[in-house]
Length: 165
Image 1 (tube, rainbow, N blue to C red):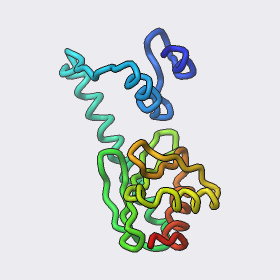
Image 2 (tube, rainbow, N blue to C red):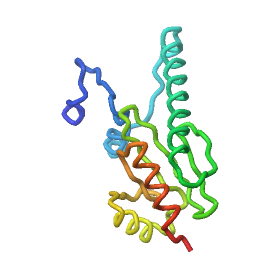
Image 3 (cartoon, rainbow, N blue to C red):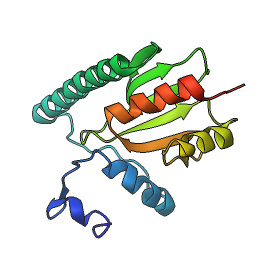
Image 4 (cartoon, rainbow, N blue to C red):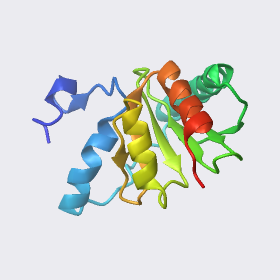
């Protein structure tokens, strides 16, 4: 595990999560090993609570800004809200949901909900547009590491040119 994360090592057992991807990088290995999440005792101290509160506020502010920036770049307005993982956009036209995964690095992810049944057609369409599409274990489309402008373009192209019916 240390070799896998060596590019993020700060010192000893400490790692810097500059791209907000360490957990996602570790999950497949942890699942393979049968690891279980544990609660760390003593995480209720004032210092930890303050750090978590600051991080939560910072993430909320970042998610709101991301929602606003993407919304301003969309050709047609979509219904939008903010969930725990980030902004979400829903299209009545295509019946797709765009779940934006905020990343501190600025290279955000999008999971396209309600795309399991049309994954083949959608992935072919998006790959023709130059996007690298992956399929989540649950079957929906995922595009990783995109800027705000690229995410808005992806949504605009899908909404204007992809036929879901």
